[in-house]
Image 1 (cartoon, rainbow, N blue to C red):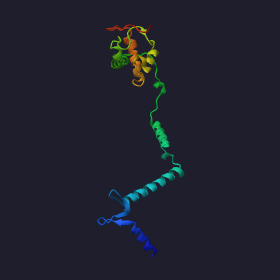
Image 2: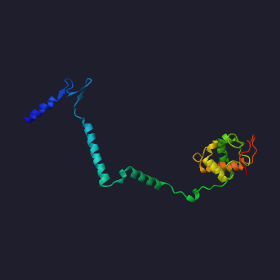
Image 3: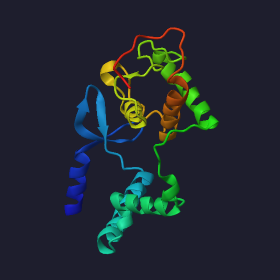
Image 4: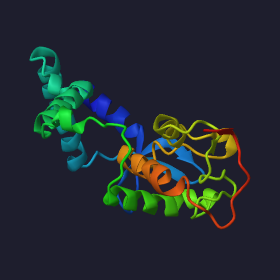
Amino acid sequence: MATDNIDQKHNEDYEYDTLTNDRLIKDHDYDGIRELDNDLPPWWKWLFYITIIFSVVYMIRLFVFNDDSLVQEREYEIEMAEAKANMPEVDETTAAFELVLLEDEASLASGQETWAKICSVCHLMDGGGLVGPNMTDHYWIHGNTLEDMWRIVENGVIEKGMIPYKDQLSEQKRLEVISYIMVKIVGSTPATAKEPQGTAY
């Protein structure tokens, strides 16, 4: 008897579509749209069950067995350690960079190529100077030593419009172009030399 009353109350809460036999919830409509109360499809239920099982297994591995590989930071550390272990060893004695004037033809030719692509825009191909100063005379604004020129090429002279090249040219390329300037450009005779600037050395 009690079961019959429950079924009757249950049926009173719903209506059924006469065409599709879909179960509709009473008084749940808006702008002509009726709310259905159909059962969830089996594939959705199984997907939900699988996510629950996965989460339980994951939590057990993480908190019971302390599996650090599931933590992103730990996974990153493990992968970085593996990558470092697989890197070839570098002989630091040969890898050390030495700041010395290069005078061999190959280095000077490479320096000339860099000069033509980058430096000649402001200093002209023959070094006579345009926006930048004349590089052929013995007057220097920021010093004339190898170390002075290295610092200028590396850090630039922003107030004069020269950008830093430490991120654009490798150490070797910077040394080659500086060597080309000191060996081939300084002391040469440009077609139209810009007036001297700076201090005579």
